[in-house]
Image (cartoon, rainbow, N blue to C red):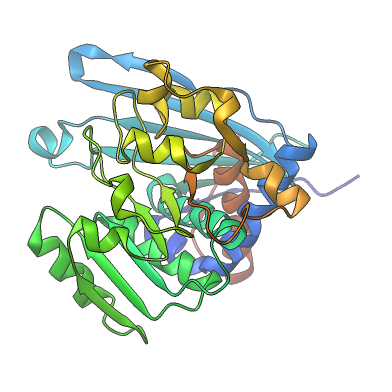
Length: 329
């Protein structure tokens, strides 16, 4: 008889950040996308609980992939900063042993989400960006911009980063935080961002910011910001003229970058170049060096479980986190 697990490890935000490097996260997320494509992962649909009287909602994201199973429980409450001094989005990942069902860990889901979202952009960039891509444009200078840079720098040899944001102070904070990197980091306009070889967009905009005429042939774009109906960062004509890769049709058409043109009847499933998981499994890359490619990322539960596994294994090895007896044995 196998030894039964003896405790649940509580792993906080600082530990998540310290335990996982971006190369490991990219490898784990890439393997999860491939498992999803080949049918070796389970991922029921994301479910929502709306709380309209509080202007918020909860989302549950279960998955089983590799040697782990888990669920992320995450909220979106836009009024939190003003009402409670809390983040708009918070989350927990419960990571379980598939053999026994024992809850092996409860992991901070906020930091984990930032890392796995960056890792997804890293996977997409590795498969879709030109091999000689060396400039990165970031539209949005918030928390996600840092993990986008870290992940993309892990798959391409970057020489310059251009960041644009409505908040000049956010740009300055980003430049200061990333000043120890061996590359040029500077602020710029959205048009200057659009001139880069690789672009990542991480804003909550409901009005398109990037225009088709700004984007050069051969550019790869990671559209990471749209996560709800009505959000859109890229102009519709840019989406229609590019080769669009998605993580999941149901999620992307409902709340990803393509949701607005899809709802308007301007974008259809047949307009999709491919699913990222299929591209990973087939090792298919960009159509040609002149194509503009776009990755529409909504975030999949397999990513959370895959990175959760990395976090848990690293925490056990380093004996990090608080082990408690949640389950009465």
